Amino acid sequence: MDRLGALNVFVRASEARSFTIAGQQLGISSSAVSKAIVRLEERLGVRLFHRSTRTVSLTPEGGLFLARCRRILAEIEAAEGELSQAQSSPRGRLRVSIPSVGMLFLPTLAAFKRLYPEVELDIDCSDRLVDVIEEGFDAVIRTGAPADSRLMARAIGSYRRVIVGSPDYFERTGRPSKPEDLERHACFLYRYPSTGKLDDWPLGQGQRERAPELALGMVANTLDPLVSFVEQGLGVACIPDIAIRRQLEAGSLETVLDGFNEDCTTFRILWPSSRHLSPRLRGFVDFMAEKLFPL
Image 1 (cartoon, one colour):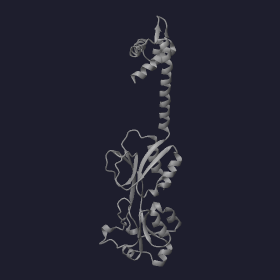
Image 2 (cartoon, one colour; image 1 turned 180 degrees about the vertical axis):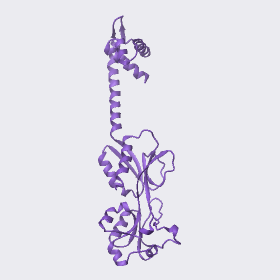
Image 3 (tube, one colour; image 1 turned 90 degrees about the vertical axis):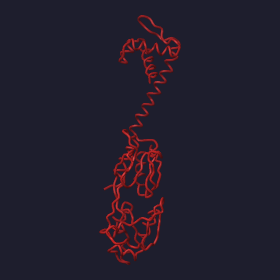
Image 4 (cartoon, one colour; image 1 turned 30 degrees about the vertical axis):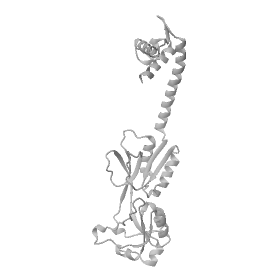
């Protein structure tokens, strides 16, 4: 930085043809300008100015050096301008990790990409507990309370897992009125891809003697088959309400056993602690908080 400052002093003095005027422009004394030029000449091993009691003029070497210095300072100014623009307009690579049910987020992520086309999304879809900092993630979306003090967190919404079936299915088989009734229904279960564990249905087992013995009708590690099968009247499934909001509003799926279901899960965005968020990360956090779970 000292060298860049010396170059700026040299350019100002060259253009003003006066150490005094250059000092006035830079807010320093003429003697400070003179000393900076002398140090620069000593470092370069050449004389840059012819000096007289009234004026200064460039030597041939000084003229060559002036042209190069102008280009250097112009490049620095351009770089600062680009950086300033980047700080105001989200762009660049954004590496995020989302849960395996990330298909629920895809419409919102697509909307974010549409709004900020210069942001390059690098998406990891996994239920494993990633190390945000060590693995170089800009942000992760996860459930549960954050446990890493190195991370900032922001809640972006919550959802409920609901037990659903189609109206025609319940007309044929009857609506379950208590958890034990599920033992005579075809139940479609979700298997977590990363662990292979089956999803436990939220039926308040802590207040009951035993969990119902679900009649296993199908297992899938994505939600699409579960939604499709229940829509076609083949059984019941436990599905996040945000994945079937349209079907619930249209009445093609109905919830049952709501009185036994106390489920509520909160999603949070986590990112490395920093005083200054990049525009792309700030934009991502704000966008997901506003758009992922619209009221």
